[in-house]
Length: 189
Image (cartoon, rainbow, N blue to C red; front, side, top):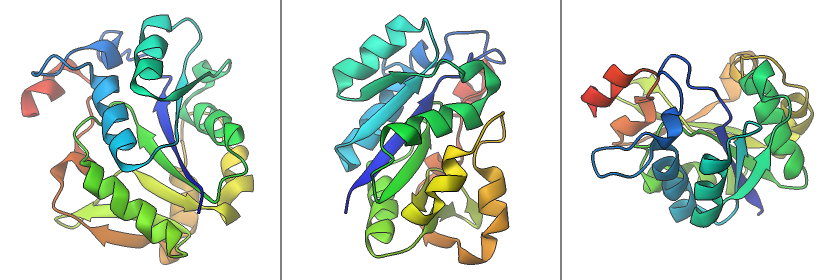
């Protein structure tokens, strides 16, 4: 099966103070690059969606092996960026939707989501100590709903509307819950 990852990297990072995805983690790897590497270790096809003018991030993600797409409507929110990324791989059998500000997700966790999609599940998410996290996998039947997204809600409403169909994959990976929105979030790492 052709499963593609969509790395959402088009936010402005305003709560962080700007350029969040270029900010180095303790090992000096930029946040967005670490998230991309974890995806690429689990699957070969990663589309990174960036905002217009974010050339440093776009260049870094391309050097890592991502197919980088500029979303002209990124300012409208995560939903617009997600739809733009999925549109680039509309022929795929499924999509792993990942957030570039979540650099601590293990590649093994991502691979387990891919395996569930390949086994025929249509909606898959990891769970750690009873809490659902990211990334989320969507099967092909969700293509029209993903392409119709706009605004800042992302795919939250799709997941809520199909909660009964959601396959939860247990994992020993606290990284599925750890996003970096503010500088103080780095202290938790």
